[in-house]
Image (cartoon, rainbow, N blue to C red; front, side, top):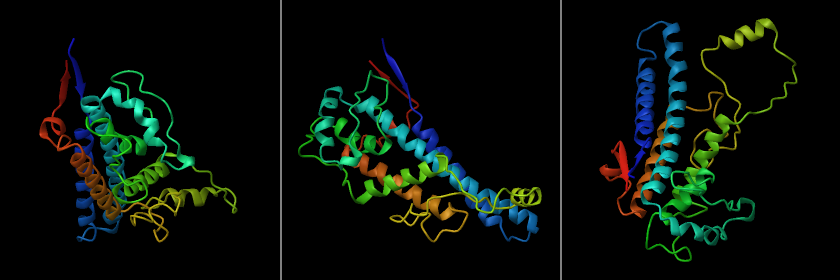
Length: 245
């Protein structure tokens, strides 16, 4: 019986583009002659929209990798993954969990999925010979830094407040701040210049979202190059669904 693969990556990428464009428009509105209250409103939302564009784009890339595995992945190559994993640092050993069935994603962290997809989707690749991404540098290292930034947004962080709990008045003041502050690991973003030690309390800026967009597009373009144009081919990138037979 034919099986239909409904592809989400294009929709998430388009969501990210729309959110980023809204952030640009809000930034342009700041200081256009409106009131201070309007400026604070636009300033507040441009940061939130920029951050959400980044999250949507990360979803797009992971969905893209899952879809590529479904459309182009070669089941016989999964047995070779441990061979490729031997070159990894010991602290980052690849988990030896096979994919259970077709339509079930490879249950590995996103960065390893990115590292392996080119090999799994190309018939003539050999693990002893082919290394599509440079592990410690290049676009792979940049993308893994974006993953670390994404993790900072979704993982809980424990705070120790030496000054004690906020008073009712201080809490009200904190809630009324026009720009959100975040708890963030300042070590993130040293390679790409995103966030970084010098970042202010806003953490994620419109310029950061623009940089992330470029890194992610370069990553997709590199993957497309490895897979001989099959990723950015409109029949894959733009199609709403693909039928397996």
